[in-house]
Length: 339
Image (tube, rainbow, N blue to C red; front, side, top):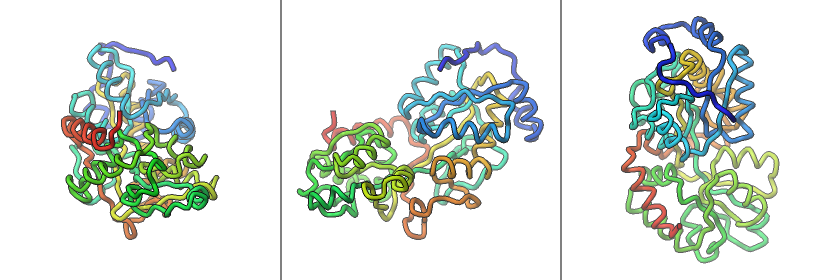
């Protein structure tokens, strides 16, 4: 998709003026701007349905969406900002990558109008607290293939370290959100020892959570150690004989965040989109369209994915410092013997 680039000298209302506008006033200003550019990690098949849900409420704001992988987002926005080429208005992505953008100083503080409380035990900087959804990391497996190969049904990551599972499961060596959650749940040394044991059992390396589940459904390999719960549950509805998943206790969980980008060319539309995404209406659309899990208590989520009374969360750090992120990524790759 070709995105319009604007120099930082383009006229815009001061942030403080925009932040004080009511929703109706913000919507009127956004309609004058005409569009908003959204960089996102939503999966390809979810982006346009989410755009349609927004446009059902705000039809006069065209959404130009650019889907990027989580690791592409920091470099893309930081490079654009340093070159004084401002394309993105609003960005949503995994918390470790959004934290990198915050630490690089390329985000604009903004508090959405209908901001729900943060999950218990978490803290985030004021003005950077917008949550799009949470993700849980689960073990997905193909029950048909598991039975055919006489493999034990995996009910923990430790199960995948056993000889029977050697070479029979995949893992994403870049899933820092999962590793950071494990560290919070069981301590650094035990989490690192687990990864080393998994690495010794010859996992298949993957770089996409979606592809990992697709491969499991096809039967090769028989399981995925770093599948996302929402995607597994969504696929099971279409293919129940070839996919199942297991929620651990505690359950590794991390946040996907949304923020306004500094020097956004459509500043009012950016705030309107941010407001809508975290609102009850926007969050119910997120749940209904994508099966992602909202942190809001007034949104109905998939109970097979998220129920803290059954699976208490082990939260990854939503403000993970860049140095710590790089350290954990290096530890993961080394422990798993990934290239």
